[in-house]
Length: 118
Image (cartoon, rainbow, N blue to C red; front, side, top):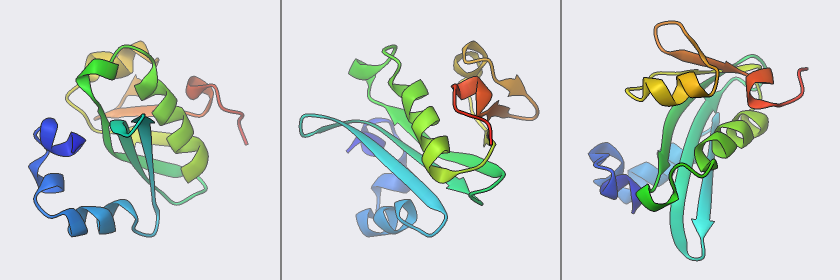
């Protein structure tokens, strides 16, 4: 499981709890597969209209630097709804490269993810 490989113990200790969290109301979870292998996952919480929050994004090491993270952020916001996604992270340089503005975390708008504005 990708969560375990990346050391996200809170997601890998109890598979049923993790499943329930990833499929909870207000949660949009997308999984990118490479054959039968999970390459990446994103979870976005959203009110569906204005605000979305990134809860989790993981890209397996062998799939990094290929645009998969940006694609998941774009598709996650598009499916979850909202005009912006707020991000708390330790990967500041990645989000700066995407054009995110920093405000006690990061915020990506629909336009910065090349999505139509509503």
